[in-house]
Amino acid sequence: MYDWKDAGRISVLLFVSSLILIPLAATVLGGFKTSGELRVSPFGIPDQWHMEFYGEIFADANFWRYLWNSLLISLLTVFLTVFMGAMAAYAFAQVRFFGSEFLFSYMLLGLMFPFAAAIMPLFLTVRDLGLLDTPWGVVLPQVAFGLAFSIMFFRTFFSQMPEELFEAARVDGCGYIKFFFLFTLPLSTPILATIATFVFVQSWNNYLLPLIMLNDRAGYTWTLGAMDYRGEYTAEWNRTLAFVSATLAPAVVFFLAAQKYIVAGLTGGAVKG
Image (cartoon, rainbow, N blue to C red):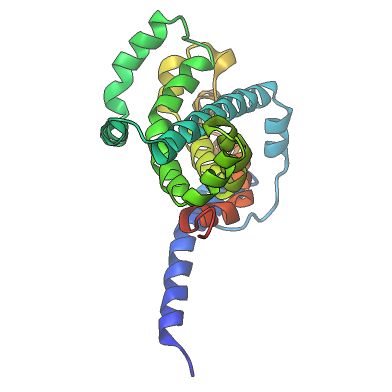
């Protein structure tokens, strides 16, 4: 018997997927079209595949510099956010101390603080620290704004670990720090991958913060490089789309590779008691 509920779910999933995949496919295909064909058929298959536009992008030294700057900033942001967030969440989940709930609630206020409202204070602070036009001028604010999100998810995950596991380790002389590195982190691969993926994609696509903190073209991320490239080829949207497609690829690959861990991290626990 045909299940209309399953058919409805599949239809909704296909519709939502098309809203994401069609613009993405149009962007990738646009890099293979001439300017005239792009104006006439922006969503169609190219009549003739022009590989030279992507070839020019990959041969451009600026492309690789923008890519490296984005990769460096994103990886530093992921490492610091995940490591610091995991340690803080572990303390909130496993260590009992006075004022822990108040401090946890206070840290979660960062989720309600709009990023744009902090641009001016952030700029002045980064300038006073001498970090303008450096990767740390982008990395540190991203870590600060990402900690509340990571601590919230890590704490929920760590709280599901049974007390018996820690008690058994403590009998064997294992303290909080040793337990964190030897047991908690190895058991937390799904949530680690989940947080790392979200932080990486957000950092990779960040435009406003690099725009404010980076003035030297040598330190531009790919998001700034795209606008710079758009200014260099004002009327050549095919080259611009080729540049955007090539620079989006790492984030898409990273997300797809960690997809199964994301699902496990959002729906499962580390240990079933």
